[in-house]
Image: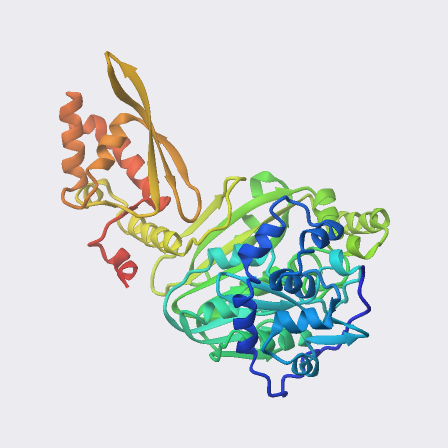
Length: 508
């Protein structure tokens, strides 16, 4: 079922043609070509083309659009005309989105519904088309893009930068809360896809610039910088989206080291990246050296760690494996490269920087639970940054005891009950985040009692004094443990101090 070879031009879309692409987006949505429809097709966990072709054999508009724009398969002209009505197939062919092959049409690019109301044009997955991916292949919004989107701070701002923008998913998301977005990429084909996507989604506040890393924005500053660079540590430059051609993790170092110079005061930068290190004990050492003394608060998050062999094989299978390459031979080449560089382990994660001049900047490192899933973490990240500021400023116990705390939203407490003398008695509880990172912890009944009073009406000193009376002990007995627990909950984003200036920005 593999289709004929597609157009591999750097500029496949002829965007000077007078085609209103917003109409196409409306047609796709009205026809049911949505995330929900795709989810229904792949809900059985099978992504093999023969299975998917049978699951889309009903001939509905949505199924024909999935075959055309997701699976990359030829569709009869009449079926395509019905699915895309009232748009003209001739206009879409002239634009470069479709191509006629005998009695059928085939799409020159894939389209994917993303983030509820957006559509993203990108190159097809070789799994479906049977075609080898080119060096300038434009990726869809895969897991790394979704992770970065979930971890991006969403504040109203004037300017944002999307570095290594690809097809533009981060730019389009940032355009919803920033007045102006600049998207840069070295890949001319990606920028052509990006311009198509801006028109498809009716977005007008994004400027596309071609160039290497920060070169197109020299001297500019931004309220938000997001970057998903070609961070894979590889011995060559096979794919623009994956390989930088620089030794080791040099590309990640450059992106992170140079980011502070492009941040406005109070601005955030978030970079998704991979890096190498010697052992488990020094996983954070090298990234933190890159930005030591940079005038930013730093939060380094690690998602996981792999030794060289599985790390290399994962990316080889994802890239060259779809093209029928000899993976065993390539694996040997990659491992020899790692050995020459003295690489023992790889970590993958995210660094969040916030420009804050005139203060003693703080540094925090965390390794996330292996089972964490990407969700909208913006509010939680802002709470945690505010909490770190608060804790750095209020290091002493006395001032901390005089604060009034409130439980943050997006969490839940689950009680464990035991039947005793005909009644249910709470024996323990679990507090967990329902949005953002899933920080969780077990609480005893005394901590549950303490947190139940965190409504902002009483100070922590008063709450601990009440707990001490109930336990028939002195305040100084419960205070040290209570202080430790409250600080830990603040660091995880469970508690805020509404009247303290560190949390003032959360009200905006």
